[in-house]
Length: 361
Image (tube, rainbow, N blue to C red):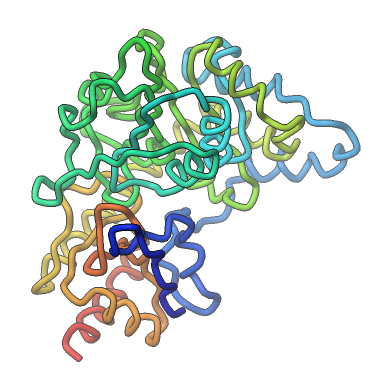
């Protein structure tokens, strides 16, 4: 698909298209390396409960069982959980409920929907751009001390950087809401460490912490729309007050309950381990290509590449049947960046062959 023109800024430059997402590039018929959703059939323990709800759709959704299940998974009280129609709805609720903040800051590069939601609600957003020369690692000192709303991803989309939990936690302070987008936390793994390394989902001691979670990526539920927020009861009450009634459907609520079970968590950890092996294979194959730089040590379901002339390469890849995610719609990146989803090794090997041919053409 042709690139959409960027919006002009008052200074005469161009503004990244915050509304652009990978699904716009994953045209039917192309091999999809643009979208970070796992492409695998649903396990029966998840598919069967969802299918069973189709006979119950005459009744209004009841979020209480799912809220209790999610709370138990993260060792929280149910009133510290707010279920949402995907993580994206969570960002809208934050933007709408916290209209009184004075200095909202978004740490980039990251998923663009948090900033887009803030701007749509009338906020004047300030950006903190992390340094590509430092592999986009978080430098907490760059976040203004008087920022009363700070939003950051961990692991971060599109960089695949996993920031240390304590570095992110250090951003929390009284009088500030700290929003940590952990949509891809369940894709991360660390040798010798159980659970999700660097997640703050179970932290109840940090003032103003809001953790945003998604169940759409690992479980392939992007079309079902299910996510949740974790935080203090008082803060979540403010967000719930602006949420539409029955915002999360019955099938999505049942999916949330199923994905919070011990069976699901065990399967999730196995998927994360397999993903790490497939990611290592992708990174190793990319290292054989001259001029391609993979950012840091990728930790999630995608890798970020710096490649001079990436816009031309991306267009040529589309002509050859492959879709990858353009980087210039993310603040802090530009036309020489691409994001590539991790797939199975056969798909990766085929992609590397096509990418090499495209670069040599």
